[in-house]
Image 1 (cartoon, rainbow, N blue to C red):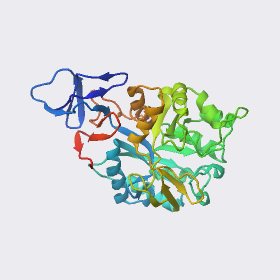
Image 2 (cartoon, rainbow, N blue to C red):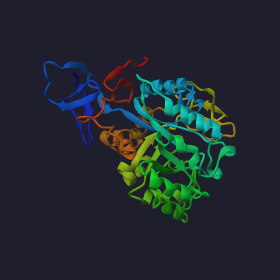
Image 3 (cartoon, rainbow, N blue to C red):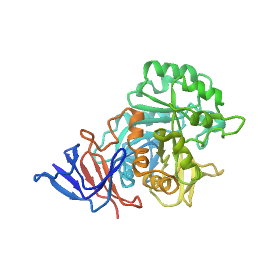
Image 4 (cartoon, one colour):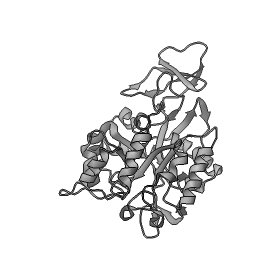
Length: 375
């Protein structure tokens, strides 16, 4: 048995001091003031201790992309994001050819690796989206919802972003609700009206992908997707808190309205964790400069955001406590996906992160194993 001692432990509603986190092998045993004499102490030296971060929307990192469809790429992503505090993630696809998507899904299905962040499954972002809100997705490969494309891989599909106003979307959503109710359906890359959005919520949509981005804007006479999402107590949403996709003045307002229904994501692409330069996403050239990733026409192409940076940015501009902040990347995404993750509690996986007041990551544990981070 091991024990993390001298840490500020971030729980669901408070930050504990003077307590120890005991873990054995890959499970958390308990959090207690007692330190058994047989426990091996690990001195946290006053750092914050949180459950490991969960990223439900990430395309790539460190020069690798999910659509590379190789085990090397998935392992490269999974290893690099550990340094950002991310211990679990959904491999997120792009709108590309049917053959490319099938190869990526098959690769994810067959992927087996240890000593990396955990691959929880697939977030299918496209190709079932609206061309007029395609963002950095390739319009040439957008198609109407087609269950046959993804049927062989449904064991791994955990989340699907789609435009519910497109032809065939209603039938698609109804079928998934009946046969795969555990799959998280998310509105995104969509031009649905307020009324269409509300209707989609009654048909299985319970989340919104990168709220405000790749969707119609909030207007006082046409609330659109944003208005419908903000109004609903049942529908959650995620945002890219890189200070580029959304102005930080919205952070506090969003949290006041959505509370435990607000998540942080990175939407990071291949150039994540790398320096500025020329990169690629979905077969399209991307210019990375000054922390922004854009297509040649200036369209934002995902981000190069790291999860610990997202936390630092949100905390700086929002009126929020540390437990409320960390829930957005731990217990909240775990609950949305129906997973036994994201909490420092007895019986939960020993996935946790030690970080300082600037949100710099010092040490990461996954399944009880410590990871050495680059200096």
